[in-house]
Length: 327
Image 1 (cartoon, one colour):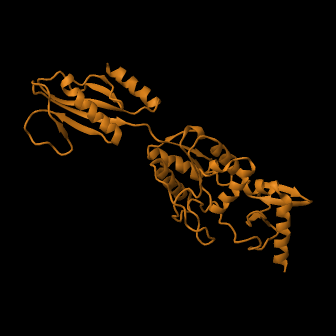
Image 2 (cartoon, helix red, strand yellow):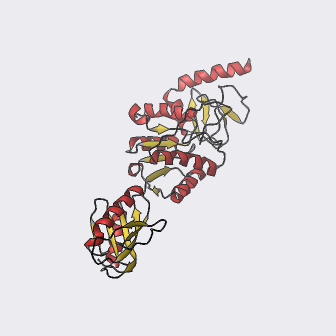
Image 3 (tube, helix red, strand yellow):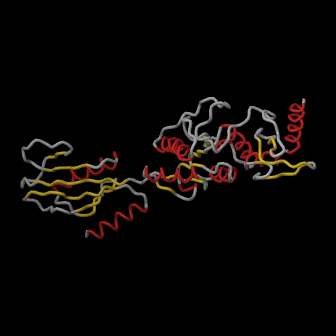
């Protein structure tokens, strides 16, 4: 195969996410039929395409390439019968041919990059995408195209993004959210017909409790959870959810839940959300819902959706809570 054909084959394998190793001859000592710059591609099943010398080196190269593909680590291989001590970092094998030539080869494995779908247009979402690229994680646009989905909507289309992710083929769905918010969204998902098997895929908070505050910190913590899952390790999110200690990747942008409705006083400019107990600005709410002649203000999709499923229940909760505050 020509150099161009080798390159075209590598691009084709990359496009199909098929693992392989590119083998390049970097040094030769005659007599040998190999030459410096000769290349071949070895696939995971041992198929070799290209030229790196005759049959004397073929079996050694194939086995070394398959091991490199498996480990993900490049190798420098010398095939020789000279009696010099092996150099550090050079894997040495005996030359099977009677000619006793020497071939040195560099083996570079290429494995399918693990994939991630990040949903959201927030600063934390952008930072998560940046970290993913630095980690060599392939970013895809659709939840069905990745084993892990990270939701970084943070109040902007939370329920829609979560439903889309859970309805897809992803094995794990991580969400930048507090436990309380995640629990509310689970209820919304149940109302929308998402079964418990799919709900079990949801992990929120998205990573360990690290006291993250800025978007970059929040994204970094979330990507820790993503990487753990992609590497086959789960992240234990068993810290108690409290008002004093924030959930990891629940973020400073995802305000901590109140201990209960009426925990803070309602002012002329704010409204206490009867679903989660948060104070919502009545001048810049995300949603306004009218029930029984009264306006109810919401700053996120989850609480708004929950309220709409049973407005009488939450209207009653609000009346009781306001009565307690007045008393």
